[in-house]
Length: 325
Image (cartoon, rainbow, N blue to C red; front, side, top):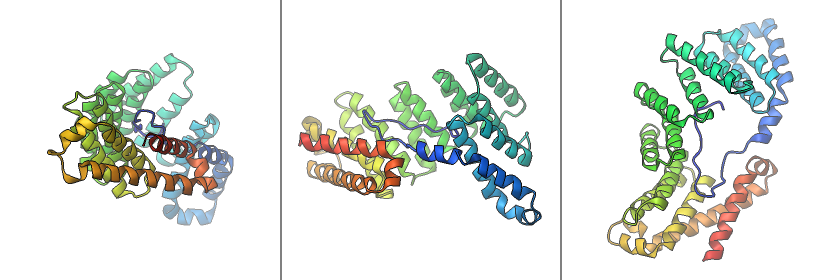
């Protein structure tokens, strides 16, 4: 909810960020955190060191705001919003974006959402480049099942701010949701020009290319699958325990090994590491790494709670690939 960034999925790929338990536990601490903050503000000592502690303290309140909204604690979320408004002012761009998010969360029906959209339009008529409001408006359009309008607005935003990698990723996800894989690939490539070492974006690009390879004509299949494997490799090179990257690498190399025709066509066209022996080696590496990650994280209760779905999906993939070999 708090950021314009959604994750692309690969086939039955179930690896997503699942932090609900942590979010619930954090939101349950709202009364204590807010009361502690109020007490601190009344303290003379706090007034002397406020400038040093404010960024961290108000950052915690902001995260608490998001957690409370996610868990349905609208009252505590409103208290967090009021605390931030009191400190930074109602005209602060970020505060305005948070207020819009709160009003969206408590909206009871479609007419309430339309009213939120009207308020965003009014605000943007006065401040056309208010990025938090622009992004909230796009997110609202998407939640109202208006992806075409959301795409149009994102394109306009990126014309004004072409260096917003997060917006490029959101645009890619919107394109992918509409079956526009080539546009999604282009958007993720643009994001990587801005953040070339973002391993998660390399993995997402690998996913988009994998999906495109599955739907491409025979002559296009080898090219897109090869690039997919390259980006998954780069992802795990940058983060050597990135479960999502190894998941994608195992999936893409398994598909490559299944395609004898495309593999033969690649022999005289691709670099050495794409020869069948190299693909087999990458597939074995990805599977072993997934097995290690699942084993290590399953033994840690906290990690298991945090990413149970991810680990189950990874184990199922490894078992499925092993059975097919």
